[in-house]
Image (cartoon, rainbow, N blue to C red):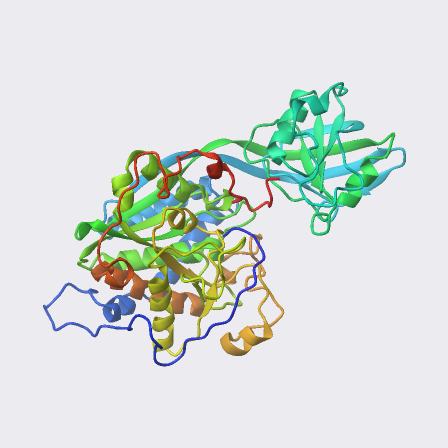
Length: 532
């Protein structure tokens, strides 16, 4: 899951469902009346803790055998893909694998930044500076040259144009380190312009206004430069802007285009004009095994899919394991963009999408995506739920209520793989148990766990191994997943009337804007933070 702090409102649905879609947990059909697992009750019974644990154990073993990581672009991810394909094949599916290129990045060792003149000073990696995602590698000691800085900063954010034009680097001394400032253009453009002007390294300082003065932990967007690029606080940048400053800067990274894969499996039976999709990202971050994020969602989806092989659905049901989510939802974006560009009629056949990203957080809350925006109005941290998403939200809340389990809403923040689907107007929903956010006292009173502690204190860290997964959370959420998938496999009437959606013209988004337009480059999906 992508990193970002969000505040979530508490909404509990306990006991009888209040309004909305009625909850129906079907009893087992008479013997011989239907294939096994054709009801919510039977499918939930077939999805077992032992099955979940088996998948987690195997994913952990894959990480252990591959330098401790299952990140896209690394051997551990390919082994994870092979594992999912093998299990799906054994269950009776004919899985397909979609390959795509993506910009891979990782730091091989900690960066170093030291002022060597006029006086020596060592800066701390993390508090003072951070390597920008897609930085190149290098070990440089050189004079610092200021490039069109605004110190003090302008009154409003995005006032500085530092480094945005090639002309900003007129008479730049080749071989020096360029000191730039956050502002109106993307960090990647600033870095490309600096390298073209002969800079051997780049430091980009934060802009300086309130809220834009801390550590600048950003992304260049793509591996377009070969030189070191770091971001700093405004205060550190202001120090480096002093006359006569020389700096030693060292970064050690891998930044290049690599290949990765999405995995799909769908039922042989069902209405192909009203496809029910359920997905989870299969990759983790390079720092660890990624067992909660998102081994938990991947394992739960695989267990549901294996048992769903014994269902005879009325709607075609497609399961997806996404690659390169951790570098910006790249697998799901590739899949949806390909359909928009080349097969809009097939995109229109997707009746709804369910997303499962982190369903076993150790200090968990049962979060349900806020499909009707009733708790998280549309704004910078909450996208609008397409029509039909409210019904999906209700289904999950009502299911948990039927089990005497509390649930709470969380925003469509754009942090996970539902993002490309809701952008195309596809009704979406899903489950989440929390990432780096802090559990409140109110939540602890309702859900248990520890107030004042992160939902997952090993989020994006080396300690996100199998011991970090809360199996009670996985058990509860995997049952909710099974209920939702089999319910919509039988009927999506509550979501879309049981029909598909009109297709957009080839090469256009659902709103008629062209694929590849300016809005397609404006999303900040990178975990490293801002792009400008």
